[in-house]
Image 1 (cartoon, one colour):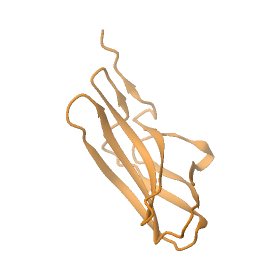
Image 2 (cartoon, helix red, strand yellow):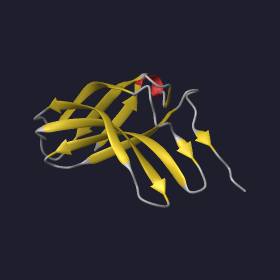
Image 3 (cartoon, helix red, strand yellow):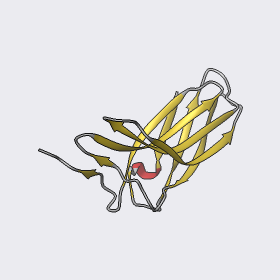
Amino acid sequence: MIEINTTLGVKNFHPGDDVTGKVNWDLESGPKEVVVNLLWHTQGKGTEDNDRVDQIVISQHTKRGEANFSLKIPKTGPWSFSGKLISILWIVEVVTNPTTEKMEVEIIVGPEAREIVINEA
């Protein structure tokens, strides 16, 4: 089991903000490392695109543990977006290596800390 908690439960962020929080894990075996990624990906029609914009690696060998994280959102985007054909989603992802257990939490990134929504008729 992996749990991701952002500080104060905040899930809406501005460009340049730090996403901070804590990750907890309780696994069947101790991982070599716990990797916390900040990434975005497209979803919808056409070719999917994605990018990891920040990462921290926690060297860890215990089956149970917790660690704080701080990841930097770029100032240049892309921003969270929902349209008729495509969406851009931001994710805080935790992956353990080599056990490859994984957990994700969706966040919103935008100039007004809101998702851009375009409803086409």
